[in-house]
Image (cartoon, rainbow, N blue to C red):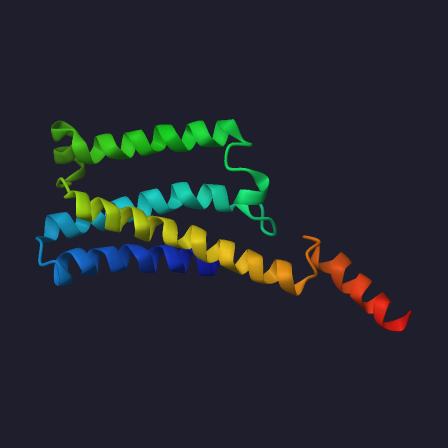
Length: 145
């Protein structure tokens, strides 16, 4: 979990630096991009936390509708925090361009894709069972039979 949190924070810092240094936009836009990455990456991460061994695509993205609804409402509130003028002043946020939104959503989803990759590697390593202890013991028995 610590590594996942570190990855999320690195993505937020990356968004800040890309918007501020690379694109040359102002500090308010860079802070807004980092804010959105921090909040949206948690929404993606909620899907990731459903299983430590099985892919979200194997479980089914829509198999837990309460989670889907909660994430959708949270994302709408995030859009309101950045898009509605009176909310922008409360959060000290700025509107972002379409390119910035694509960048922010890509960086927000990166921890999900990284953990899906880790799950796939572990799935291959552990013999496709989803249960590392079971698959290692079965492989051990096959060696001696």
